[in-house]
Length: 334
Image 1 (tube, rainbow, N blue to C red):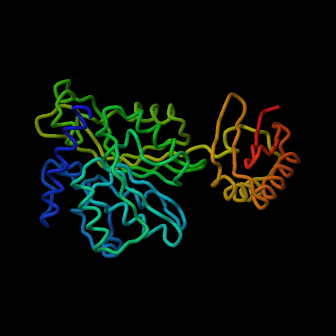
Image 2 (image 1 turned 120 degrees about the vertical axis):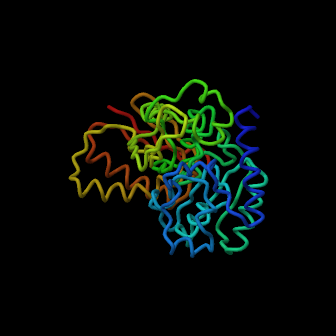
């Protein structure tokens, strides 16, 4: 574990011990507490639904609301802390969905599991791990959320690549985080204490956008929600809502399709059920390949959709082949 991870773990382990004793952890060192009330965003109704209050969050927003979660989806919270966002997400994706939380701090995991027991939310799982090495398989979740945690990572590019890896094609990235609006002094950047307090680890909007795009995300949107200046520190930071998406199987290519806007919307809906289930996806220059578990129902859907695509999209070649218990669909530009 790096020095930065050690500093973060120690600070949040101490906060978890305070929480376990029933006290609020939110003092001036909270990620969301910079004197501007950044950790609001939860309605009384949704807090009542899990029997918790805002002190259960150390964040700077409400990513569960930002993500527009839907029943049946699988959602992952990076750095889940006391579990508030996981439990709220679990309520939103029920019935049929599931919420996962990943945290590296044993003390926080204990608090989160205790909160889950109190709220009796069955469709949630808290996993021990780091956000740089998420303990979930590829393409296993529909949505990745996080609440003021990614800025704590020393290498945010690794975290964003991991988020992209675990998202299914067409999956959504929706996080609340801190960003730098003005460059922080070098001594602050070097301070491990400031790293653990969500200050020194902030990067600019431009850096965040580039890192997301380099990880493979599309449609990056960063919305500043509240700006803050810190006493005795030059520079400025802000809380932000950050959205992006992972390309769908057919969204990787810019194809000349003859469908109208309404027809294309219907076609995307038809593809959504298929795109939720690939076991592997590879992308190359001018093409993409998706691998599925063979089955008569899935094969029938794919054959029908590929026939429709061949009729309307002159700019691509669509192929489907069976290899043992796998179906391989390839799309390439002609």
